[in-house]
Length: 468
Image 1 (tube, rainbow, N blue to C red):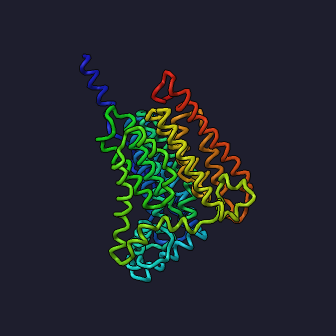
Image 2 (cartoon, one colour):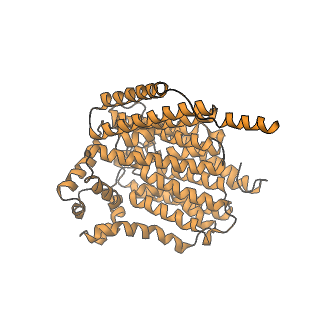
Image 3 (cartoon, one colour):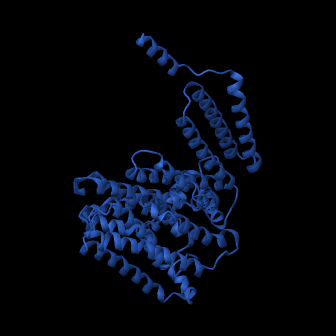
């Protein structure tokens, strides 16, 4: 008798989804048609937009179909949560597509490089000196010339892909702290929907999400080392962290903002000096294709130092400390002194790591990364408004690790977004001095927290690992 009741209950639980074809197809078709029509009307009938709209509409139809079957077969909140996650993902794509048609001075410039490469036969054009971007970026641009989409859409599409890569690494980093539940997923969507992340690639046509993604990957492997009981000297995580940083640095020199976690890695005896040779080696590998097609090796190896020689302003529309000075636009003589000051600041942090014996823990690695991505661009001369992009993303991860700093991504991202305004719209919302002062307050808050919790008090507290 009991067995028959169990069998009956099992049949009820495993019953097949039911429902008429009309109930399934009508909502799917209606939702797909509305979404497809909305995108095409707003963006025009460009090939990329048309195909994207078709793909989104079709996926939306599948989602409605799947949701219907799930509800009929096994009602529950899990199905609804999954459905909502897919809807958020689609919404993030739609938001970006809506911005693809807009052009900025930077996208005009990159499109001009694209046209030059295409007119010169692709990769062979890289022998010339027509761009101030590193070879790795130009390889990507060369590949895009062979794809049948407009230069504007191709450039933006490449950048947008890495919005989601950055979100993925944010998800993985937060998952190290919260192994179960939806908090890591929330971190992914917080990055994907962050205003500066959306604007940077899909509107501006910039690719700061690319090097930031590799920096997050490097950070992920460093945090993994802090959780590993073994020393990192023979752990593949050391090599992966350095390789990821090498790729980030090869794509854009802004990766140097991540210098403090690397110093922390070395001074904590988690990596040997010779392992850091991987970083220049990765850069060397990325420039070799350009050398083989005829560009002088000396120019390629000294590409970044040559860029420094072209700089003279202490700050270029960045909310950095030099906006507070009255002679920012004529900082030629002060530029080397400012650069030296930033180097001294980095060395000072290095002494703290070494002599205060800061523990290489999961939370301390996250804190050092946040400090580095804020302090270095704030005090380094010659910065643009976009150079706090990595800090914008890192602030989101930081807030998930330390919930009491929930406001940090709002403030840092807000300051960055406001600093974008003049370049993108021609109108200044707040003066750069106000934004620089606000960012300075953020820097003080983050550095103070690190010093108090990890260097001075934290070193002798019951939580010696630095975790909170």
